[in-house]
Image (cartoon, rainbow, N blue to C red; front, top):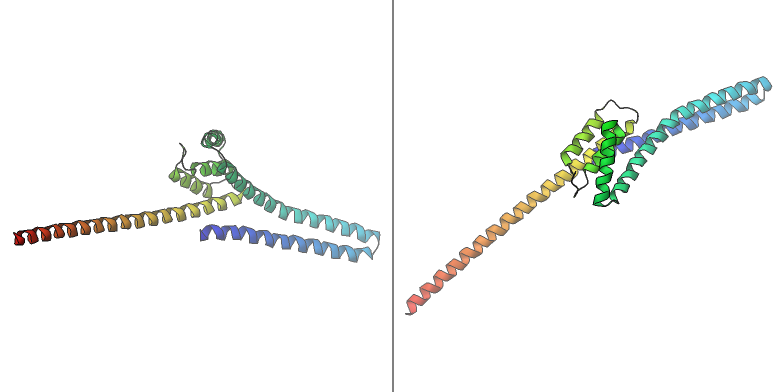
Amino acid sequence: MKTGYRYFNKVRISAIYFAVIAISVSGCAATATGEQDSEGQQGQDKSQSAQAASVNTAASIETPLVSANDSLLAMLRYSRFINGLSKDQLSEEFKRINDAYFIRPNDRSGLKRAMLLLKPGTDFHDLNQAKQMFTDIMNSNDDSVPAFKEYAEFMLAIIDSQVAEHQRYNQLEEQLRQEISKRKQAEEKLEALKSIEESMIQRRSQ
């Protein structure tokens, strides 16, 4: 869990960092424009060119961030979407995504397929295959949306945490069963001793 949160925090910090750069670049352009206005029309032309270059630079910085954030939001929306589907609808959705993934494998369709594989109570539920898909996405050569790899690592962290909790629950459940069994055996021994004691008392009274 902590590993996944660290990566999401890294995305947010990176977004803030580049936003500050974009604001700084725009601020410098505005200052340069003010100074050039006092030097006449030729200065204005230079200032406008510098401002245009600054805008293009800021746009080139901000665009990938918007794309990454939008892509992550799209995955979160998809997760909410499949959570609202019935079992039959999930089967239809899995067939659609599964076909799309094998026709044209990429990180986007791979994430969707892995999330569907995590759905319990379905015919296609496969935790191990989902984990393998998330691992493959982390190691794939598809760098079109790097945030997808961080999302895959985040999902793996959640799965590992849930698996560890489930194993701990099973251990506690097994310990409880053993304690109940020991208590039952002790009660049976106590009842046997009581029966022997009553039998001995009856023999003495005869």
